[in-house]
Amino acid sequence: MAISFPTPRRLGYRFNLVGIVSAFVVLAWALIAIFAAWLTPYGPGEVVDFDYFGPISSQFWLGSDYLGRDILSRIIIGTRYTVGISLAAVLIACFTGVVLGMTAAVIGGWFDTILSRFLDALTSIPSKLFGLVVVAGIGSSIPVLIGVLAVIYTPGAYRFARALSVNINTMEYVTVARARGERTLYLIRHEILPNITGPVLADMGLRFVFIVLLLSGLSFLGLGVQPPNSDWGSLVRENIGALSFGAPAVIMPSIAIATLTISVNLLIDNLPVKIRDRSE
Amino acid sequence: MNSQIRSLILARLGIAVITLIIVSFIVFAATEMLPGDIAQILLGQAATPEAVAGLREAMGLNDPAFLRFLRWMGGLLQGDLGKSYANNMQVADLIGGRLANTLQLAAVTALFSVPVALFLGITTAMYQGSIYDRAVNFMVIGVISVPEFMIATLAVLVFAVWLQWLPALSFANDVKSFWELLRAYAMPVITLSFVISAQMIRMTRAAVISTLGAPYVEMALLKGASRPRMVLRHALPNAVGPIVNAVALSLSYLLGGVIIVETVFNYPGIAKLMVDAVATRDLPLIQTCAMIFCLGYLILITLADIIAILSNPRLRK
Image (cartoon, rainbow over all chains, first blue to last red):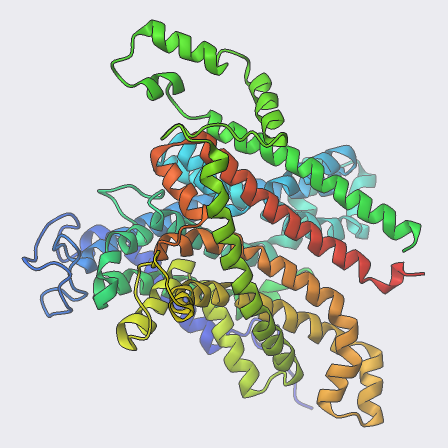
């Protein structure tokens, strides 16, 4: 009788091809964001082409924009804003949401009811509209953008973490820990959190995509990252005039957004089952 | 309708009203945060301090914020939407025609996309796992993962630049014939339809597939029913509730989509009005538009919940 060894495949840690490819794309964008300053062929604000909306050439790999600046360099620098702001916002949103969600599930009672009701009210404002109103009120800057995006996506993270924690909360080992006299903080950190980490990380990836989309949308409306800096959404806005003759200046930033969001989505969809559905 | 359903629906409506109050408070607070003195901004740099103080008094800006909030809410309820800061016109007059335009766009989009999305959602569930299903799914994921403005720019590239069937970014104000009207509407409607159909297809497919797992569907399979019969006769009637719920929820994506689409295509609707108001920081206009959007959104999601309650057979005794 053959002995079966616990290989990653048998343990449910199998990672398929689509997952690996999308993980590489995500990793590539992360590296570009980190090393942006060393990767740009030209300065992002430098006018280098005499022609505006120039085509793809050996000199300008992705063409030039409405002022004759190099699109490739601007996209590379834009990665910092798009990825950086979204990452900061998603970390804040998920940290707040998950901590509140776990606390609400463990404590329960009126704390849970009031918090849930309030955060539900927050979700019944369309996200784009909320961003629009707040940014119109306070004015757009990078900390404001991060804060607004984090506030918009906290209720979702809260709801998700709370739903998972409520299930864990009914387990025997939590009851045992309670009977031992452990405090709320211990329950959250040592009993609940380890059991919801996988799904929460997967949810964080999906939320990251929503944030990238919303940030790009706001920037496209002129409310996101302000000139002279620009993220991918503002690059599309700046060069929208090139749309009627289909210049690369308006297409390439859109493709950058699409590659990032689609590969994060595919990565999450193809994550090893063990990581994604740990709670089951 | 029994008392249990009635009390559930009343509770849901009560929550909707409370939510609306919280939402209006948030909208008011967000626009309150504007730095600088509104009276000063209105009168310009050359105004004397006395004039500014007088205007502040006249506008009631010296009152506490909560009192102004109540006054603003009271005005809204009586149909007094205030005056625009930018051109001193009544907000109600500015909004009237624009709102009709946006509703028209939304209605045309809904009429066009709901049947298509339902058809695709149900048929993909019917042939789950086939090449057809996977192709539709791939497109749906593609549409969901990109921003709305990208779908709009793609639509322009395909239909206006490469195929040259439709006019590009301009929305013709002087529409003379029905054909021109159709051409002018085509691009915004196509873009919006893509955005909301993707959500609708996904949710409809999920709703049908979840009823396909039920024992009575398996029974139909064992009796030898064909796949279409199994889905259409046995599964679908029980999935109607979740599907209608999904349609109402997807329609709420119209609100987000419409903001981008009206901006891209220069469509004279209420979202374009609001984006322009943001540029000029015209607060009464922004507040009113925001409240209209939130109200629409709230109505749609409340409707979705009420349909879900009504369609739950366990509550129907």
